[in-house]
Amino acid sequence: MLLQQGQARDERVDLNLAVTLAGTAGALNAAAFYSVGFFSANMTGNVSTLSDHLAIGQWQSALFYFSIVFAFIFGACVSTLLINTGRRRHIHGIYAYSVLTEAILLALLGCADLWLLEAWRTPVVVLGLAFLMGLQNAVVTRISDARVRTTHVSGMATDIGIELGIALDILRGRDRETDAAHNRSKLRLHLYTISAFLLGGVLGVVAYQAIAGWLFMVAAGLLFVISLTGISRSRRIAGRNGSSDFATESGD
Image (cartoon, rainbow, N blue to C red; front, side):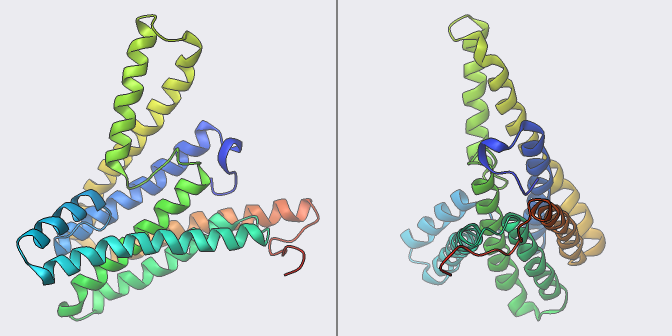
């Protein structure tokens, strides 16, 4: 799930990635909104709210919403730098290591939600989660060549509409029948991703009502298992190929 990249990935691998990480992202985002009243991954809504506060001169609120957007972008930037460094150094499991980084930081965020003073809890949870959602979205975007985006529901909904339009043209004989299988595959991927995000959100709120910030620990544990599975597989593959998972490029 975290090893093959781009065209080397098949539909099953992309579906597993989408359902697992979109479900996790949905749970975290909905739980955070239930807890502190802010969305950490909804950049469309956050930018719109930012513009609203700027227009009416609410500078402190505007600064906070700007910080959410910046944290998301910064997370994606850090993820990209980490992945680029890993690929230059031929670290086969770099995407798994990126998810491992997310898991560790998410566990720390869970500690903050559980034990931080109330005055600091909201900004730390919102900005920390925005950073992690940016990091995660960049990982899945890069590894899937942008076929999977675990937090970008607006884009996925748009893609579903596009694929439905293509499907209707195929059914009416206006488009090539040979494209039907590819169309169904993409439509299935986007539907599964949104469904996972939705179901994850429902379960996330229910779980947060029951165990509060321990939900972040549970999600971190899931990501930890996923990442370690990918790292273990990458090392086995590297061992069979006679290379190291931490090989560096010549000249480093």
